[in-house]
Length: 301
Image (tube, rainbow, N blue to C red; front, side, top):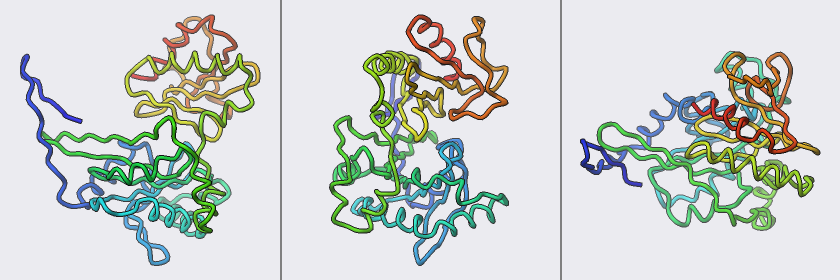
């Protein structure tokens, strides 16, 4: 991806300023972790059982631990290392919870952690084609993020997305006991998991609203979670739950922030609910589609 600087009507290419050390990338991420990823920083250089984890983070939305590793060596196998760390975490859950509580002075119980949502994120200025292909499975709990630095202190961060035709990794992992046990416990959810029991009418309704949301702004992505499907742009904009006879939306705005003159949404700020935000909306048709998009768009700002 090329970046340009504009001077009146003239464009000039911003030159890349490569990172000299992995530590530069790590410091940048750790000091801005919540802004860049929405994750909670737990500990840097976390050592366990002879292994060193660069950054241990926690996802408060999915209630799961996230391991972040920084790479400059293009030849390293991210899949082998990723499964090693996932296995290490699942075998030593108490140590991760203890580290979280001691570092952040909190009282998290292991039973509250959704271990099935654990994942490993590799951050690097670039990845080889082999690394991209090796992680191109729809249900692999390993993510690749490219980070580049340009002149004028410009930083770009681009998560590498799986292709639409990505297959399941489970057939590949059945011959290895370590990877087999990891894939048996860790679950990467897809849209199909949420739609599997939906009627044709509900699936069509979902596709209509999904396309409308994706057209609200550039770079909105669909991120299926355990309990809902998130639509995300930097942060979750809206979370969607597939119901038997309709769709339930949670608009990610705090109470008092949503302008809803028609009063279609419900205040759920004082009640427990799956998605993010204080506004709930249930739809069974497309009657108010355009108006509902105006509500959801407010969370994009």
